[in-house]
Image 1 (cartoon, rainbow, N blue to C red):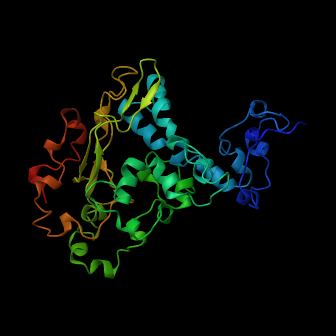
Image 2 (cartoon, one colour):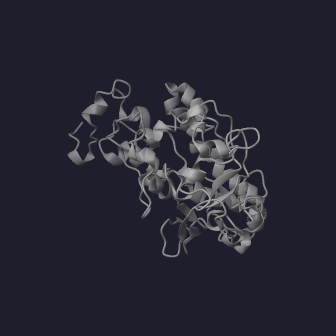
Length: 374
């Protein structure tokens, strides 16, 4: 066989070759293709660029059986949270027709597989290997986690919103995976769920800050409770600061019919606000009555370029919903003075004037009327 030109060769790092788990694998063991071809074009025939996860019989499942079995239930894989939210507003159990097309064009691009966390930057965030095919057991916070969860979580956590400090946990050097466990991210022991707030292995403040005698020694922690002793406020009500709210998703079609998703277009307004509202999702995981609420990026006309009136049950779900901002501070404007900075402060609580006309009915259970201000 003739010598292969340098520009046709594939180079991998010495670290990868020394990896006792994966370093002995040949390119074709994962990617397929033709190992006998003398040129790149031939070698890449029938190659699989992203081979790591295709279900319980996928490439990674050969060794990582438990994770592969559970990953089907992971929201990172099935995107059930977004899919179900759209279906509820459409008044259907399953997306079909124009909405299925719209979902696949815009929303499904965030689907991830094993390699998107452990080998490469997720394709939705631009792609590219993390470290020359080397497998990373712990996902890189900047290149992986916040590369996808960027405009909200990353900016909040790292203090990249103008005038707002980083989250106290970020300042202590904490990474995403120190709170968000592999069990949560892989869907381990998680029944199929409809929303990210249904995941019972998700982190809770009480994991590190238990509701014990030391906790209740703080007056604010002891007085904000119901008759059964349950905290009526989520932790973020007192310890979060302004976060980003968007009015709608920025999806469209080009004149040629190609799907477009834009984040920072000139007319895409977002607003930094802090709003407290009623929790419409009170359950064992989120029992608080009062919670910060964030505007869901949706409006009735989001998918009009695929068809008219595709969300006939838009009002079935609120557009302001339970939020857990990643910008925690010990001292915040609302906990500095209680009566002077929180109680009775109309601007802090979601009110009728904060709603656009199209979302008044949808948020009837979230909004706090003047008469109900604490």
